[in-house]
Length: 159
Length: 184
Image (cartoon, rainbow over the protein chains, first blue to last red):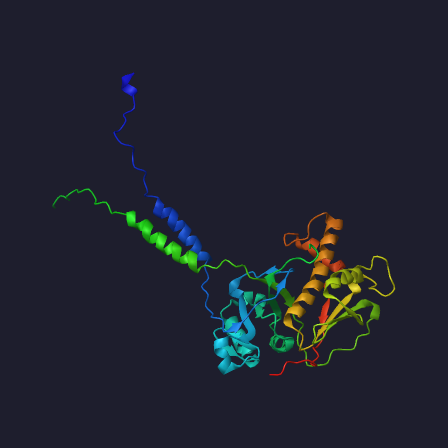
């Protein structure tokens, strides 16, 4: 009987932490993959309106952003307070949109190009004039898929 | 040939590996923004230089919504409130009581939206959202009666098409007026 008795050590065995790095690495890779670095610094104030009938933007690589809003305070001395368009990192005008869209198009595979979406991130307080100009420009260059970015709001009917 | 000295391989201390990985992990955790971008997707009409053809449309099939520079609404010629827009649009499209002044059939209904260049963007989105909501609710109801299923993105395309064939989304946007344009 004594033959099969378990040998007990003097101290409790240390818990092996050898697999801890593996676990952490898995988490790390997860976050690395889903991360998208913020590459644009907003120069215009954009407080998006809220809406309920929202759709998700599918692939971020197929989306380009057009920001419209009043310049931030530190830029107002130079650019005034009238609503302006921001593309990438700088103030632009409606005339710069075709080149901007074309540049984005070049980075996308030809097969996916029809799915390119323009995301209009527009401040809720500005007037439609400049938005209308942008829309007209987009129509002229054949970029018809547009998404009006909005925050998720409360459904009026549910209230 | 000298016999290879068999030596037990030195163990690399990997205990700091976790620290390094944690450091990187924290960095990515902080920089990550998991905000799913959402918005109202629209398809703009194609641009054409020629003026649009004058098509005769029965006035009863047109649900005109005008938004002026003071963000006031004019629905079918009468002042209206945004809150009642959705119900009115739904009633107009389906016309459950077969009224003579509402749309003949759901697929004949046309919603016409016209805004001013001075209209606030927030108001425009609110109005657009309500009109879209009217259609979404109708599609949802139609899906319930026809297939007994929720209308969602997961619904098979064939069923979706069937619903949309019955109640197509027709929202035509007219060229904006420019009475209340903000001075540059």
